[in-house]
Image (cartoon, rainbow, N blue to C red; front, top):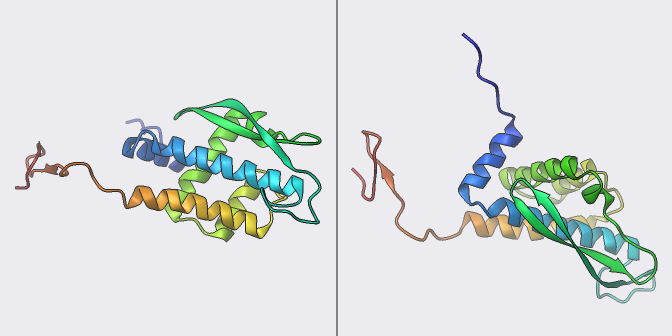
Amino acid sequence: MTAKPSMTPDRFLHEQLAAASPDLLRELLSTFIDALMGAEADAVCGAPYGVASPDRTNSRNGYRHRDFDTRTGTIDVAIPKLRSGSYFPDWLLERRRRAERALTSVVATCYLLGVSTRRMEKLVEQLGITRLSKSQVSVMAAELDEQVEAFRTRPFGRRPLHVRRDGRPGAEGP
């Protein structure tokens, strides 16, 4: 007897999230990537977007759009442009396959365990981003938490199916 190949928890969770809603994981990835790039661009600029500060060293100047291909589909990534110098999220676009796997794992972990600031900070550090302040991490956690909570509390469009004892699905209970 041969053993069945085992499935990693990340892959299992990814498949379960994709089965729950095909667009859920893509939306969560998009939100997380946008929040992470925004927080990192704020760190490079020395102040949050739209806030006047004496500590500001640079400011934003629009976005560059790039496609990021994932297993859940293509995500349009809006990369912040800076007035002087440049910002490029090498953690995302240089190592596409590894980054996509890591981001999927981070988003799935946030979905499964809930999103706390401390947990988000550890997950972001695992991606190799260490320049973020506590408040930036907190904002990112709040944005992702809102989207996760909206999915968890969404109304169902129709009455859910019940499975009868004989295993056949039916519109009504036994």
